[in-house]
Image 1: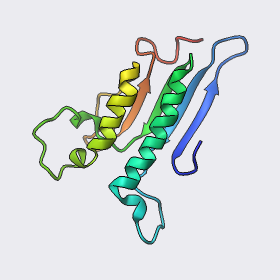
Image 2: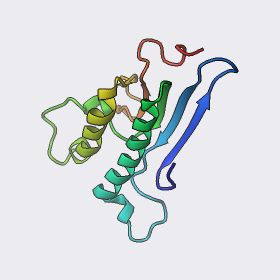
Image 3: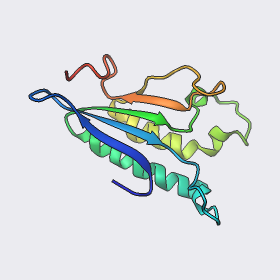
Image 4: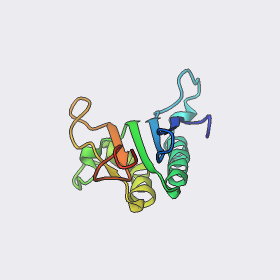
Amino acid sequence: MSDQVSTVWLEVGLPHKRKFLVCHIYREWGYMRQPDKTSHSRTAQLDRWNTIVSKWEEALRGDKEVLVLGDVNLNSLKWATDDLPPDDAINKQRPLIDSLFTRIFNLGVAQLVSVPTHQGRCLDHFYSNKIDNPGKSNV
């Protein structure tokens, strides 16, 4: 794992049953109490996100169900919107979103939350590589 990102990974399961992986993410905008705010830059955010995505890819390469949930701070309700103003947060976060689409969604993972979770935005996400029945396929 990495001490640069806020994730917790757990392997869950009963004896003699298939195990599955659960990850909780908090995608930070930047580190608290950092005087120079370098962790808030788009480059620093993308570096941290790519660390998360790399670990996620590694987990998906195994033969287990992988559930990832948490506060991702990316509004998934606007991902497909084409006519956003240039200063919209989604446009600024596009490299993070593109990484998710090209590296994770291409591996059969889906975002299962499609309703607002915070002030009209969907920032809290739940992903699964077992879309038909998340959390039940390995019990």
